[in-house]
Length: 519
Image (cartoon, rainbow, N blue to C red; front, side):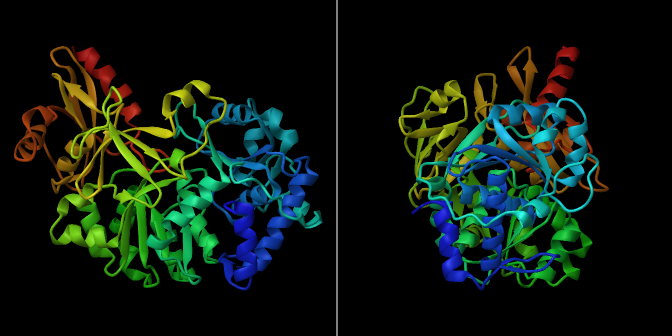
């Protein structure tokens, strides 16, 4: 059966003596871990969640073994975990809790103080503390309740039953709850298993926030009886120390994390020889940084991943052989999201819904067993993007003759200037080629003459100086004149989401307003 309950039971039978968890509190075998999961499920039932009911409970917590255990307990019980972005404001968290109709809230010690204030004070009676230690607000404690609970036999869900509810939306705006089924999660684990070559000796490092769909990539490691270790937050020092201490073999990082690792002087001072694979994605990574990563981690395979929360999450993969080929004779491949994984169909559609030929750009539309069921309580949005068995991603891309997908932009980020479409990722790739540019984002701002004008927001490398004229001159030899940003700002840092995505909506608000004032 393609369910998480079945997957966990199979792992317990086949790999019970394997190490499931590497942690400062001690290693856990899969047999011991599953016993804890069954007790956690019993605890949730004792708090009022009915087995197999599909009732939802929320988790407000940084990465931890206890959060993972509680998510798995939801699968075991037949209840639906709702991990929440802890970087949201209290009012936004309350909005998610209400939209998801959660019955319970598990909260980390550091976030418990939020419950003492509106708009979250009403949740105090339904909350319990997930992490060890005293809390600012008196709450029942997870470990104590779990120890007193009876182990619960696993629920046997249908493959199409909801397994988890993940909210999109980054750190701003009203997020949408994505209904993810058991079949979605297990299918994607099976789809990527061959490419990732997972073995029982692997250890996967969870450092990207667990409220994000990228954490579901780790399911294949549970499927194969491999190990997991968790970091509550990213820093180069803790990542390097964790790789060395627990012999981590797989790192799944967003580009912003990789860049910070490359710049950290401690990189060469730790034994990270256990690392065999770096999986990266979620946001674009400039080809120059990919080359630097491959040079800094010789012998470590690299996988570029393209996917979305709604595709749970992987759609395309640019594997190790593709990266090596790019260095040899296809440098353009470093800009590709990869080729569709088994079971995925991709079409490129025009604005009027006509399928476009190879090489032409349009909206990326996909189908496959990992495409989510839809959004929770959003019939209008469901009708717009889940149509006739296909998911309309909102991304613009093109396919080449070998099936590589090149993701050019979000439709909403594409700039139309003087009637010409400009994909901001193409312009950003050119900016990154300048050695003085550390980070960059390109947006569209209002322009009286052209409707929209390209605007570059640039972070310079340490100790570097650069003028607008030098940027324009650099771009002239790389791209057409209409693609060159003539307006720009130099800043200390770009605003980014928890997953490292540049918050272009924030940049547009800031610089569009300034442009209007200057016109």
